[in-house]
Image (tube, rainbow, N blue to C red; front, side):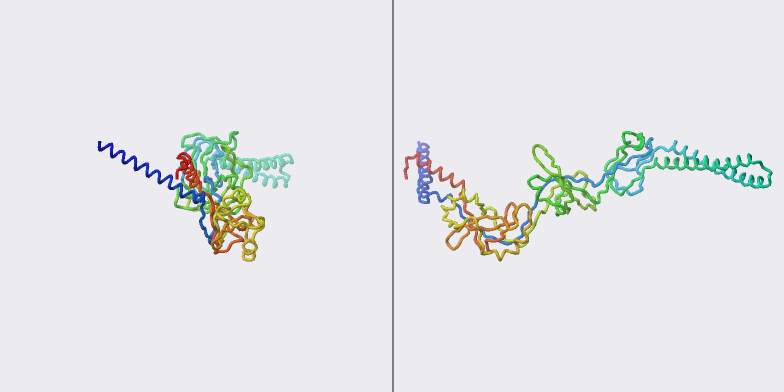
Length: 427
C-alpha cells in the first residue's frame, strides 16, 4: 500500500513539473514574440596577420632516376651494392665475367705488338731498298714491292691498334660503375645472373640497379581544381611527411600541370614542389601533407566571415535584420567613403588572387552605435575560411554585431507552440 501511495505522489510531482516547464515557460516566450530565437553578439574587429593557404597531399619523388645497365652481356660475377646504399661517382656497381673479353683483349694486344714489329722490319727494308736503288743495285719492280710491303705494314698496325682499342673497351664494359653520387633505390640482379646488353639487345637490356641523387627531391601534390587558380610558380610551400610529423620541410612551386587528373569524379592538378633534402630524410614514395602559402597580410584589420553579408544575403536576411531593429542604409549599392583615405594605401597592396578585386569586394555588416544597430557597407580584400581583411568602411574601434536566428531556439519555440495547441491554449 505504501508503495502505491509513493508512486502516486511521484507521478503527480512529474505532472506539475511538466506543466511549469512547458506551459509556464510558453507564457514567458509569448511575450518575446519569437525574439528568443534571435541572437545578437558583438564581435569586435582586430588587427593581425591573415594568411591564405592551399592544402593538399602528395608523394616524394626523385628528380632524376638513373637506370644502371651494362653495355656488355654476360654473367654477373660480383654486385657489391644493396638497396639504400650511398654510392659515389666511379664506385663499382657490378662486374661481369671477363673470360672471353680478356682473351680477346690479350689476343688483340699480341696482334698489335706483332704488327708493330713487322712495321719496324718493313721500315728498315724500305730504307735499305732506297740505298740499293740509288746505286742501281735494285730493279724498279723490286723497289716498288718493298714500298708496298712497307705501306701494308702500316695499315696492318693501324688495324691491330683499332682491334686492341675495341677489345680494351669491351673489357672495360664488363665493369659497371656509378655515374653519379646518389642512393641505390633498387638492385634488380644478383651474382650469377645473366644480363643482356643495353646496346645490342632490342629490349633495352637488363636493368642492374636504379640510382637517384636525393639531395633535392620533388614533392608532387594533387591540388583540387577549386584551389588551383590560387597556386602560382615560386610560391613558398611547407611540407610535413607522415614519417616525420614533427618536422617541417620548406619548398617552392616550380611546375603546375596543364592537364588535369580525374579519379573517382574528383578533378585535381599535379603541382611539382622542389624541396632541399641534404640529410636525405625524405625517401622516394613517402606520403606528405602540403601547405602552399598563397598570400599573406601583416597588421591587417580583420573581421569574422560570420558577420559578412552580400547583397543577395540581404534579401534573404531582411526579416531577421528587421526583427533585430537594424537600421538599413538609404543606398545599398554604394560603400561608405568615410574611411577611403585611411585605407587607400592598403587597397594598393591588394593582389589579383582570385579572391579580391583591385578595389576590394563589397560586403555589409551590422555595427553597434550606442544603443542602435546599423547596417553599413564595407570593402574587404583577402579572405580565408575564418576572417577577411577590411579595406574600408570600418575603424579599429568598430563594434561589429552578429545578427542571426538560432535554429535550435526556433525549434524550441515551435515545440512550445505545439504543446499549447494540444492543451487547448491553457496558460
